[in-house]
Image (cartoon, rainbow over all chains, first blue to last red; front, side, top):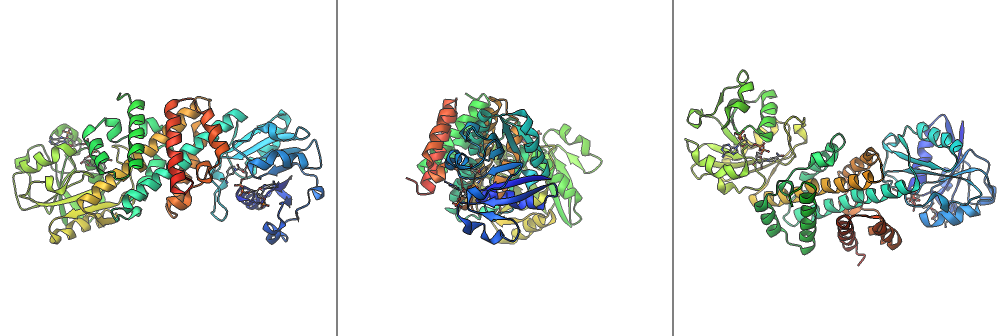
Length: 253
Length: 253
Ligand SMILES: NC(=O)c1ccc[n+]([C@@H]2O[C@H](COP(=O)([O-])OP(=O)(O)OC[C@H]3O[C@@H](n4cnc5c(N)ncnc54)[C@H](OP(=O)(O)O)[C@@H]3O)[C@@H](O)[C@H]2O)c1
Ligand SMILES: NC(=O)c1ccc[n+]([C@@H]2O[C@H](COP(=O)([O-])OP(=O)(O)OC[C@H]3O[C@@H](n4cnc5c(N)ncnc54)[C@H](OP(=O)(O)O)[C@@H]3O)[C@@H](O)[C@H]2O)c1
């Protein structure tokens, strides 16, 4: 049985808590949070604490805390030579205090408290400094039913950057389409199946192969009409920039 | 029984053919294409022709042909006063010849020959000039199990524009993430669950509410580090433009 102590009680920690609790081959033996109020409701399910000096011994400590607090908090942990993993996409493994066996357990997914998440759909990016600790991290990923990938810090930071494009920026394009359609009293629901299909298509086809539309065809007439239709200068600039990007990718200029 | 004649044999027509063929309350009584070769394989399933003068009488003629050919071909149809619908997102209903009962049957989805599509996931945008023809169009949408929406030409052209943002432009962001991760030998598969979840999230939450990330939080440190990481000037410009767009949407400037 893999024993885990959870540090932090935000989006990621809450989802990890629920997922590990369900498993039979790993257990959370203690849950720490700086503000005890957040984890008080769970005191019948798990031992809770807001006192670092009360932390027990465990196979793995998962620090799912804000990026900026990882270095200092890892230093404040009153023990050494135990396996400590943070969950951040962007923080270097070297920000963890040297006294620990350092590791990263980065779930590449978007978590929101309350919103259900299927862990089998969460890829875990694993990194550790000593090879012999890899097995513990892998075991936990397997317990959760996750796919896992060995990813070093530079690669992880690149994934974090890529995630901004496919998550934050894509979502902003959804937002712009929402603004454009709202302005003409069009129900945004009409666009939802297309949004799903666009994401589904690249699950088994490269984005390069999946591309269609006026920019790829270099259909100047349609592009010109679209630009005339767009009312906001900001939306127009984005239209032009992404149209040029598609043209460049597909050799149209 | 609703009788339909299909004109054209491209992506949209092929999918409509398969979907209508399965139904019990509508039937395709004839299939026309300019090049008979494309529809020859179907001659045992349906009457085929490449001769406009051989066209029979039907409740509805669907012209799923290239945008640029709609006006001329509708004029060349050797009959009048029958219900003729095109399937384009951008062509005005008035481009159909006046001698017909004019209509639009625009499926807002991305079709590719060969790639399966679930028609119950295709919203149909319906338009017609005389109210009494609406029922035929609605019936066909119902027969296919589609949701349908009454949409006028201006709204349809706005939807077509919005679709460029949520389909072509979103797909280009997937492509850029692919380029960025490839450059560091990262398997693009790791990003696929996030791509799906990002699309799924806005199915029951507005894109505004769904937004997260450094731009929304105005996390200057992360944004600066990301900009330093990005190697291509083009990717950088897109990062900056969309970051500013998110900031503006969420009142960060
Ligand atoms: N959210 C996501 O989608 C996601 C996805 C993958 C990875 N991550 C990474 O996972 C980690 C946690 O993210 P999150 O979204 O769960 O964050 P969150 O919801 O904002 O929660 C932050 C947690 O960190 C604690 N904390 C903050 N500053 C602290 C300090 N100085 N000392 C002790 N505890 C402190 C907070 O405690 P209080 O309750 O006392 O404030 C809280 O429990 C981050 O490294 C993040 O980059 C997040
Ligand atoms: N593809 C999509 O995702 C999608 C989605 C919604 C709406 N639409 C709209 O649906 C319509 C058809 O699109 P598609 O993707 O199916 O097109 P497509 O695959 O390119 O097929 C075009 C069809 O039009 C015929 N055609 C072209 N020029 C013609 C002419 N001058 N005279 C007679 N026939 C001609 C072609 O005949 P040949 O076989 O002889 O070349 C072919 O059958 C367009 O209005 C498009 O905007 C497409």
